[in-house]
Length: 397
Image (cartoon, rainbow, N blue to C red; front, side, top):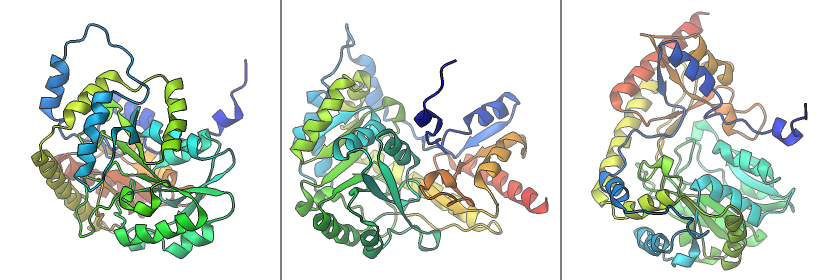
């Protein structure tokens, strides 16, 4: 039997999905599983856009251009103008979700063995894509005691070595919900210029900011016009995760030309997904206001319940729809698996994402978990009932 490749054996496991077999087994056993492990909202996708796709006459579902449908890209600049961002369609390349956008960006920006600098905890798939691109990941740790605020400039400065080629952020942050202020991004811009780095910023949660810190896009740093690359996606914005439509956005023409090479190799982004995405651009602003208010209510429910549990450390996040909490446990992977395999409360349990998988530093995050407040308030309360009971059971053992 042929051997599996070493890189395949060493591939980074997703903390978001790796426990899915245990969740499936729990469901087969008749248990209700509350999924707080994954950012799959139960918010309805805008109905008018879905209907537009249903009514679109199609005789042949053909390939789209490798950089995305021209009609879709032509409409996107108007969306970005809402955030004071001026773009042309040629500065936007459509991808198969934000995941492909991250991967293509790393391939275009970085040579094998070069280093990507990022604050941790970070979106787990960044580590996976860095491995796939043969890029080294160097993390700067942020801490729950400060609400996972962006580390100070000196922490970034100390981490920069000759092999560092880019800094990557997620703002608002997944998995922590932290929102990085304009002042900090402007400070970071000086460092990017000083060391001639790329600044890659994942902004897929820009609609969801709840605190006093307003969203500020790195595309509004004019001095970084050739340095900034934005990762974007419609998945969370419109509750359209299955459409798999993302984008790389940059004013660096040479970079986009390079990414286009990879886009042409994979042929095209999804045709149906782009039809939906184009229709979604017409979504009324009232939709976002209602969705944002709903997430804020869910956040408040989740945070209040967590903060009332003995031994739990939890801050109030300002953005996205995640809470990263510290629990009175020894090992998050074992605890999250135990919840699915062995625990039940009212014939139900809760699925969480182990926090360790969001760190590049070995051994970090062992007592932490990510919770996505993507369920309605009734289900959130039921999920927290399960977690609260489970922690009491653990404390008695």
